[in-house]
Image (cartoon, rainbow, N blue to C red; front, side, top):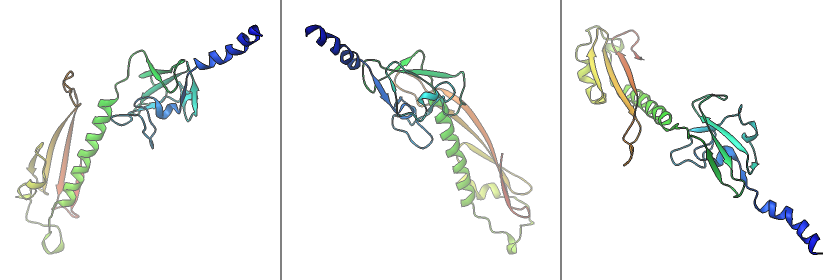
Length: 208
């Protein structure tokens, strides 16, 4: 009887040591989908690499010991720039990083700041008030256009009067947020020109 008890207890002991991780595409740190982010302090800038880890994509879960490969959201499936997470084979719902981590935070910050910058340009253009003479485009030149729009121009921009209106030249430096231990990291510089051709027919606004 004792021998039988020992044999039947072995599978249970093995099962107790087996881990399981549900929904890898949402439970791995900083990993999410385009429509859902459950486990990211600064958003979910990473995605499951569907080429390297198809078993982790749209999956109910993986058993302990399984590994899921992750890429940056801005990258493509099958990229060489990845990191790997292994589901613990001893604990439930526990992921362990295998090897070096992948830093996607700077890409996300850059994309967000660039989007905000573009939106602020559009808002400025919508707010700019110019009334053409007699309902048509003005024919008296563009002197004073930069002065009229000075309250709408961000501090990172300068303005130059042109024959058809004014052009704002802007330079925006993109950097990561620093911490007590890590200083801010310069990521990129965005140069943008906004042409306000208020004296053209028809009046138009162009971004470059």
